[in-house]
Length: 274
Ligand SMILES: C[S@@+](CC[C@H](N)C(=O)[O-])C[C@H]1O[C@@H](n2cnc3c(N)ncnc32)[C@H](O)[C@@H]1O
Image (tube, rainbow, N blue to C red; front, side, top):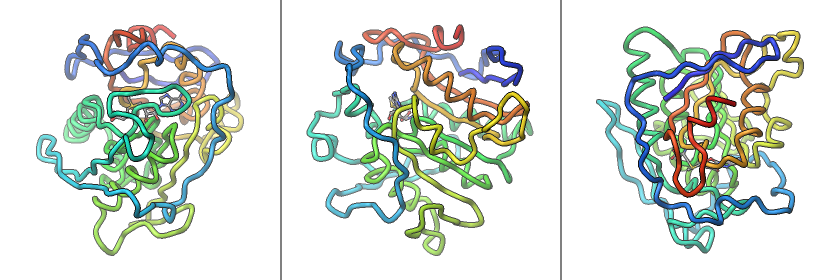
């Protein structure tokens, strides 16, 4: 687990390693060699996904996960039905693993909860971006903790439609379900969903600082991400995205990931040196 404070001076951020829980160096287990190869084709276009786009064709079987006293609901969606792939496949530019719930996102929520309890952070009134959200549980947790805006990003629009949005609705009370607007106000919060590659998604995100050098005060107060640094090929784009999106000078990044992902070569070790 690591947190980065943006310094807003054009230099790389200062990174500190938290010792909240040890990151495992065990193999990720699912990645095959294909995950290392970036195809020589442009990624799919970046799009905003509307809450109304949730299809009814695929079942979202809900169960619950308990995290040190916080209970969140999450769905299970069949990877074969959505992408024609087995659960363990990851195909660059096609599917980046968002339908599976990775352990890092649960660790991330525990760490956030601990920091809230210890008075270190509060989501109240804050703008939050969950990068590589998949199930979106950390972003949902931030929303339930009073964030003013939570924006979810995943490589795949299908993941947002089939899983993230239904998960969010499962965790909201009946009278605050997401409606069909592109920016949805629920309990006074703005919730949006964006699909696409990290190299271009900043063009869609509402709170990217247009003039990071002059500290315009825009940007996200919190960027949350779990298990996003597995591929060396994506680290530069991910780093650039964070730099563009983080509020200067107080924005904070919470990242949960493994030190090293066997088979693909990324990890916190590499990302924190970036
Ligand atoms: C291993 S999954 C983790 C999902 C979720 N955070 C969790 O922990 O359960 C990696 C996530 O990063 C996103 N991702 C990976 N590479 C990406 C890229 N190049 N551009 C945009 N998103 C990417 C995927 O869509 C996916 O949601």
